[in-house]
Image 1: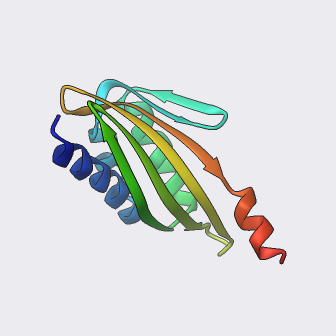
Image 2: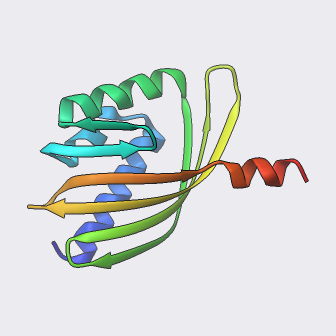
Length: 125
């Protein structure tokens, strides 16, 4: 993939989360693509679509600001700021580092490393 295609796919992933579009997010993955967050791993578009659907049902508001994207070959490292509100209005914030592997124009692996503690520390100052 060309760097601009990788950037566009990452932007599409961001848009899918912000819009609450589980189908759009899952469609970016290869048929056996992996979505990994601390403590959980989903394989395949249907599993990814379902976990995103479940998340959107309980978190109707998501904001993501992409800070940087570093691309090397068919891999990207993404840093983004994440903010969501659950149904009760509780605000969650995190800095995410995401490693993304691409294969044949689709996401083969999307691995998130999520830092929520830094925001909790800032709130307690």
